[in-house]
Amino acid sequence: MMKTYKIRLVILAILLLGATLSVYVAFREERNGILTVAFLDVGQGDAIYIETPSGNQILIDGGPGKTVLRELSKVMPFYDKSIDVVIATHADQDHVGGLPDVLKKYKVNIFMEPGVSGKSSSYKELEKIITEKSQGLTLGNFKGETLKKILARRGMIVDLGDGAILQILFPDRDPSGMDTNVAGIVARLVYGENEFLLTGDSPIAIENYLVSLGCQGQPLKCPGPKGLPLALASDVLKVGHHGSKTSTSANFVSAVSSQYAVISVGKDNRYGHPNQEVLDILNNFGAKILRTDQSGRIVFKSDGINLEIK
Image 1: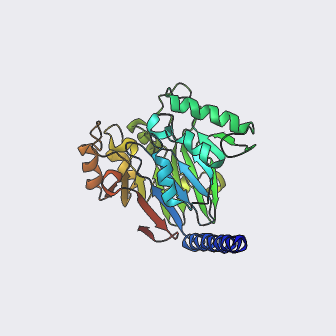
Image 2 (image 1 turned 90 degrees about the vertical axis):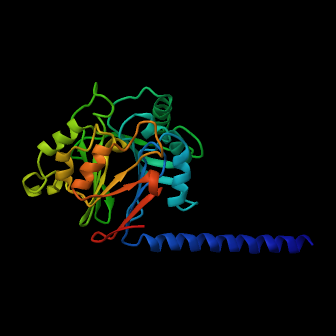
Image 3 (image 1 turned 60 degrees about the horizontal axis):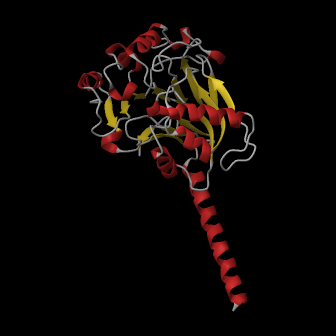
């Protein structure tokens, strides 16, 4: 009887291994030459998951709480417990609230932030975890994990492999003393002919400043490192500050000239986001508006030429 039981266990183990390998192969085939950008449904906050054709993974912001873990489980294979780069655009709760749990559950190699502290307990916990992990201390499921912390600055380029890059457009200086939103990271994801402009909660003043730096329309006159232009024009605009009227000026929307505008926002939120003026501006410039409060998770797939919504 015991022998039969052991045989059954072996067969079960083989079946589970086969199923795991099948899932792994399926995920490998699905991302073959494809960039995935998922605007996660985390309520009133931001969380963006990126997976490159080479398999590198980036999480930009973590929403206000634990919901980000559920969302990540929907876009990552169950056996994958690592994320290459985590970026906090700024220290506000609706962007970093879920990141402490992410850093506890996933092995992370690089953490990027602008360098302006937040007042929330979540941010303080996040900083404590980062300090411990950067020193190689045991935390959560990962023994002796070493995390590298980087302060994001304009001109930095994160090479994501297979031609995909993330350009840091702002901040372009030490933002110490700035408001958290003003100091927030603005980044542009580029893969072939497709671009995503990711704005955090940057206000109109920063939008106008980025426009004033040039590069839109005449990118070769304003090259960044390695000759890569720090342009604004992008296929997809992540609308700033959840559609608040403090962001998304007509001047900026014109410069970006996006085909799609994604608004990460909570259903029936108390702030009245997105603002109707913002929606009118986006509509006037012909951008197709996509909202997480209406559509849930919004996923783009790009082969470097064609851009599709899944």
